Image (cartoon, rainbow, N blue to C red; front, top):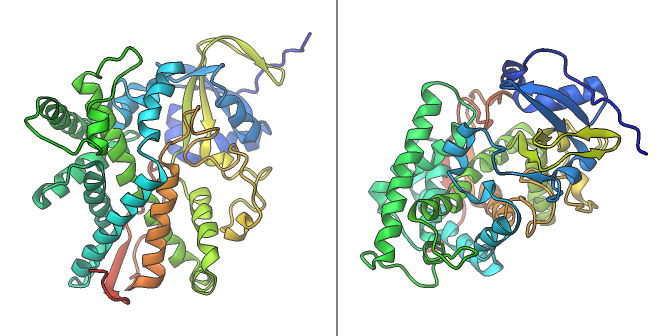
Length: 422
């Protein structure tokens, strides 16, 4: 019979404020202090078990042990994911709904998105070259928003692009915020959902027509396990869940600019060795903070490595800390793209967008699109445009989620260095 050990505990009545104060590093700090990859804490008055490291990730993505339904805090559902979203489903319902997303992440569809992105980059360069300086993060959100809507088959009118960008951006910028900022984010999601819900109804009634082979058409007419169309509200939520993550790639592209500014020698390597770019992109995804942790709930009671986890227990997987785990990464707090030269992906060590098999777990289905989009951005920033990075506050705080620097990355004197494609 297996011996049951007491799970190490973060002493105290409640650690919600500490979590807010330490942000991305909260779980990692305690894993280091307690010298364990599992510990118990209390968040918002509830017991929670925190996991980290490769084995912790393998456990967390075991679909037989954990569920997502009822695991996420309401503030996350109401701003980031939306009610009845694919991220909140489990089992066959999750696998069936996720196929809808995987079907639009084929190589052909991703290549189509990149073609659209290239045109948007070129148009943006034309505009940026007319300005003294730009706020790069905001510009990238707008660029990605326009590209995303064209990609799904519902191009935006130019006058509406900024409004849609602000509403979609607020969904990933406000879940961890409190007070007015959080409520503003929730209100923007509500407005966006209502607009999308009306659009779904108009497409279904032929009042608005979209191409039958478009992503928008696939989502609007998707049928669930019982062969029924999703209700208009849920269909709207899932359309947003294909758009919002695309706009969120702006955070990663911001990190690319920051890495090039903070580690100027990397620019030389990227210019000299074209094959270095994929290593650089993976290191940006590993090194900089994007998602702090993932959340699930134990389906039933079980024992893992001598520790008993009770049914219904809230479990947090340390995503940032696993990407900075010294047992997995040599000198994890140093920016070293070369570490990926001979790296073998085990699906549980590098987990910036989740772990496990993308077809069966809650790993992000848009991960490859993210990597390809970052690759295009890096190519433009290295080979197709010149710019200056003026003095500014690029410091990112570990308790701001997502980690966007105060300046939002200002670029000055942006110029094209290659001929336009059009």
